[in-house]
Amino acid sequence: MRQREHLTPYGNKPMVTPIVSAVNYEYVSFEILRQITDGEIDGYTYHRDDNPTVRAVEKEIALMEKAADCVICTTGMAALTMVFLTYLKAGDNLLTFHDVYGANYKVSLILEKFGVEVTWLNATDHDKIAENIKSNTKMIFCETPSNPLVKIVDIKHLRKLADSVGAMLVVDNTFATPYHQLPLTLGADLVVHSATKGLGGHNDLMAGAIACSNKEHYDELWFTRQAIGTTLDPFPASLLERGLKTFEIRAAKMAENAMAIAEFLSKHPKITRICYPGLKDDAGYEIASKQMKNGFGGVLAFDVGQTQSQAKEFVEKLNVIYHAVSLGCTETLVCLPVLTTMLYLPEERRTIFGVKPNTVRLSAGIEDTKELLADLKQALD
Ligand SMILES: Cc1ncc(COP(=O)(O)O)c(C=O)c1O
Image 1 (cartoon, rainbow, N blue to C red):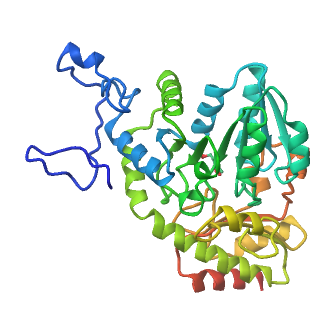
Image 2 (image 1 turned 180 degrees about the vertical axis):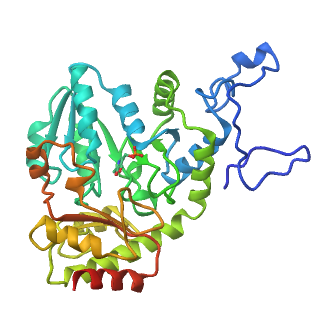
């Protein structure tokens, strides 16, 4: 941690940011109420405003994403909702893509209730995107790689399109993580994370993060969080700080395992489709090679045979790999998106997505590669 700030009476710094569970702080003087310190606005007064444990992690993630600053909140969906609430109003158009995490569809229904118009497109259809950019398009929001088919979106291209109408560009970097991709350096205004995933990494905390390209965005999002009360508790913040200490080593191993698994599955006769941007014949390979680094991330998707029962049988035979939702953690996980993250999407939206009843999403963990390949082989053969 480069952000340790809490001194002992002798000036020594603790190796871990202390968990400050205080809801409120005793004012040392009326002066403090007017004090404006860098980033801390009013100093620490009430937990919904700010918390030192949370603040230390925000600074750490800002460094990782090459951001001016970062706002942390309770979950990834809270982070996305905060972004939409802060920057969209009735009459504005949000341009987004079929290939985003399923719960965004639910959020879009709420936004529509407040008069925001939401346009859903195929992220790889550049002509259609250009055609659908309108004077009221205020935000373009994408995931790359996307959940669950790991499709790749050209961030620099979207930046140009957004600039044509002065729209913001928001990128969900949960799948790539800052180890593989830095969207702010490619033109994004904001980067959103479900920190529940790779940044936390151990299936033991929920958090969201918004990395901001400038201080104004930090202030605006801080205002929303303070108003609606999505501030993270210090206990998950401390777990997140611990996760970040091993983040790069975990991300490297997850990407190595995902690549080995993708190569193995791409040659297996029972696998009828494989999606992983690290494979040379994947539709996203060319752009991913330019905008990602250190490999292509830890998540892939594939179709088993032709039917859902074949995919279910495969999942049930796995011994080392777990059948569970979520991703980016120490254990390798698989799930069937149509039965989990996309369950509540209307049928036609699932079809547009390209996700099939027999599609499996796999999030590689940090286990021994050979052990994972052996488990997949015995479940398929
Ligand atoms: C890409 C992506 N963004 C956002 C979220 C939502 O995160 P959370 O579950 O922390 O709210 C998820 C959850 O799976 C996700 O995969």
